[in-house]
Image 1 (cartoon, rainbow, N blue to C red):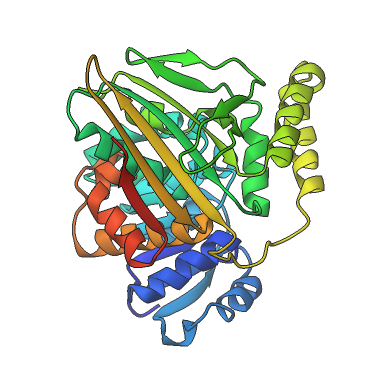
Image 2 (cartoon, rainbow, N blue to C red; image 1 turned 120 degrees about the vertical axis):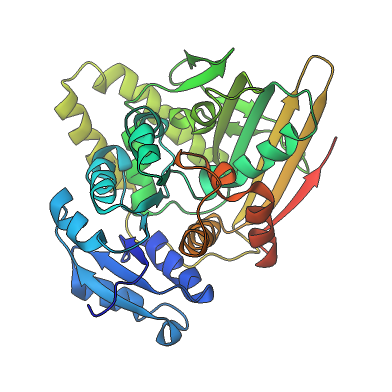
Length: 370
């Protein structure tokens, strides 16, 4: 490599990875498309619309922290799309720290977000680096809405609902099953409190005549983002897919886990969950259609007498993820983040700036309802 590209896209051959590549091209950001299989990466990159005009190269790399650090050295930011992050994230983060790179990923697992905040955030802050997991649709878009609610003033409590219509990717399905075994927490007076396990919640959605079935789904990142916030003390987040039959099956799977799998040794739990995940996801879903794959993110803010409600109507959650990642990478190539160490997408890049990026591509529209 004659001159290091400023961005490394790790996991470029995955469904989300190719969308990040598509938007890195839109932002004219040079990047390295990296992963374990050069041939597969090349095949995927060749199908990215307009890729012939992008400034990129392909790199095959092993998955050890040392090999990754060698690849990352000299770059400014790593976009990590390889999940489940509970299993695969630590070595990528370690490699970024060794190489002196900013780190963003597309995760959503609360257990992983807590790990990053508690164990990696201070180390990155000492180096003047950003580590921003969950820089993706779930839960970056609702993070934008949360910050708009906070601006209303006097808000100390947030209730968040994130729902999308679409077909989960193989990676997303693996993650859904991986988080079943973790504890999910909400925030009450700046302290973590456990959600009741294997319990569904009926969510009221603006613009819909029916309620939607939602789950804590591992807890979401928001309680971690606001754990030490000077204003917000209480946060609950639920979410899922806009398909009641599918969500009913997910809830049944959680109950099955509690009854039949949780008593097993941890290694056996992980094996059975991985087998179950693989059995329900056959392959790569089709490219999203904005007329079909809709999203909705609702944040209700309350204080003693203050209130605010923000809704973001959107489309194509995976395309939103690709755009948010590329926007973050472009920002970090051009300028330092607003915050170093552990941060949410809105805290690192600005909630208005992220919203403008999504609105500019017709992927989101915000409405303040109160």
